[in-house]
Length: 310
Ligand SMILES: NC(=O)c1ccc[n+]([C@@H]2O[C@H](COP(=O)([O-])OP(=O)(O)OC[C@H]3O[C@@H](n4cnc5c(N)ncnc54)[C@H](OP(=O)(O)O)[C@@H]3O)[C@@H](O)[C@H]2O)c1
Image 1 (cartoon, rainbow, N blue to C red):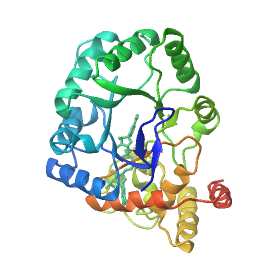
Image 2: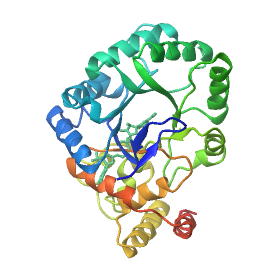
Image 3: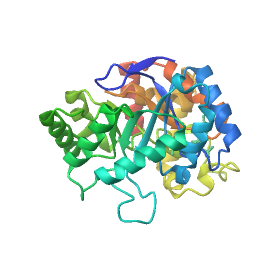
């Protein structure tokens, strides 16, 4: 494993991190505990959750598994999505953030969050209100760094300009949808992040599992896999994508690597990537994903992969 800085902060995170949106759901509490132990064995120190994952159960399962080893992990979580029925139990208002952070701290059984992320832009709340509330949390020691997710380039740059003009802490990171088959952020968001030194944390790095190569055009999805029920994964099951996968798999194999490693290595070869947060449901996924960080693609190899992607 190697470690990268989180945007323009001094914080070091593992190049491969842990995505936890199935924790407390498909992944039961004892398995979460085992997965966190495996992550440490693999050198992974960064994990990403959100208050809405499994209605708080992801944070709860992580809170249990972190007991006695909280300091070994950089813990990222998120606020924004509804946490209840009320009109103020959602969004980026000061009101909701102050409630949401206490609930996350309680579920995670910790007194600080390393990276507190806004899950989406809130068009109904002035970004200054959100940033001021987040800066207060940093001053209070409840939050160490802040990040954004699913923002466009203009939203991110506008937010950070506002923070800067008021002397508040800016967003250090952005968490966008990004993988070999989903490259929309390359036009605007990546150049903005390069210019402003904002760290990128790609989510769905494996296209929900499609890019592991475990789905075949001529066979049903493996029993228990996400592809059995997820329309997101099934959306990638086209003849064109299977043809790409075959070539990508051969490219990896010729170089002594797996498709899973290639999916990670390709992302890590893109500019500004701080950590690739791969979701896992089994202990063995942790090790196969982590080994993707050990393959550094050359510029020629990246170009060859891009050629295959078309
Ligand atoms: N900010 C946002 O809006 C946002 C949105 C989505 C996700 N996220 C974050 O990003 C993380 C990653 O996303 P994700 O988990 O949905 O998608 P992903 O990382 O693209 O895919 C993960 C899934 O692929 C399968 N898998 C993983 N490693 C594997 C391996 N080595 N071999 C075979 N199968 C493997 C597992 O599913 P099965 O075993 O069930 O097949 C796993 O749940 C999330 O956990 C979450 O923290 C953020």
